[in-house]
Amino acid sequence: MAVNMPGLDFEKPIIELERKIEELKGFTTREDLGMSGELKGLEAKLAQIKKEIYENLIPWQRVQLARHPKRPYTLDYIEMIMTDFIEIHGDRHFADDKAIVGGLAALNGEKIMVMGHQKGRDTKENLVRNFGSAHPEGYRKAIRLMKMAEKFSLPVVTFIDTPGAYPGIGAEERGQAEAIAYNLREMAILQIPIIIFVIGEGGSGGALGIGVGDKIYVLENAYYSVISPEGCAAILWKERARSPDAAKSLKLTAKDLLEMGIIDGIIKEPLGGAHRNPQETAENIKTAIKKDLEALKKTPKDKLIEMRYEKFRSIGVFNEPSK
Image (cartoon, rainbow, N blue to C red; front, side, top):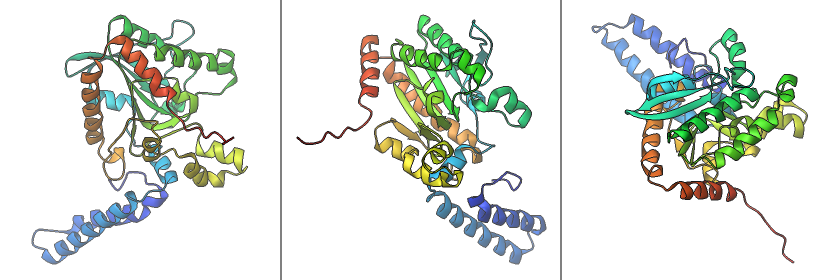
């Protein structure tokens, strides 16, 4: 992490040590062997602290990493993984929702349809992108692109990164719940491969609105949940300070989701999060896409839909009381 990169509370020991190392490098010369030895010692200590902190993160800390302002977003991954991206706008009903972006792209020369939630890097852009919380027209745009992909037999890749669908009055008036429900139904029966990646926040129906697919992956420091930890804490305990407890109870980390059979795999991130080495993370995502597309393209269409249906029907554990 560069010393000017914003850090989280639990990262303070790392940031302080990185700052010391940068200052020391400014004074170190090749002839100054004593200071060079001190530098190596600090670098070794930094590596140890990073390992201790990042390999023992609690769920709430992973939620914080999922929201890191420097974390790569959908358009970043499209740029790193794909070529020839042509963005397609509008839902042909109301407007173009900039909280969801999508269009045609090429992956190693093969045409695909790609889409996902898009956040902003600063306040101005976040207002335009609505902080990644889509309106109904965003979900209607997404399903329009998916149906276009089906028409031309193109696979679909989606990137999920949203705290949730926008709950404002205007969104509700234009059918927010219906738009998401419609997407769930239609994605379930699309006769093309669909691969899903949760790259940051995976919040509630806002995530599910583009989240029904044949393969579902969650990045190592992303989360996927029916509600945000803050929302859960407000409902259960009436206090936001209990958000860390809620994060633990919700079982929202990639490891928890894999153990429960909700997702198909975890995408490895560099130590400290995807923002520390976006290109490495992108390559890990690209590898997963290539591997799955090769297998899914060989699957008959009727079998693809049947497997997708069974995949979601099998999620969950039920305990019946003994008679």
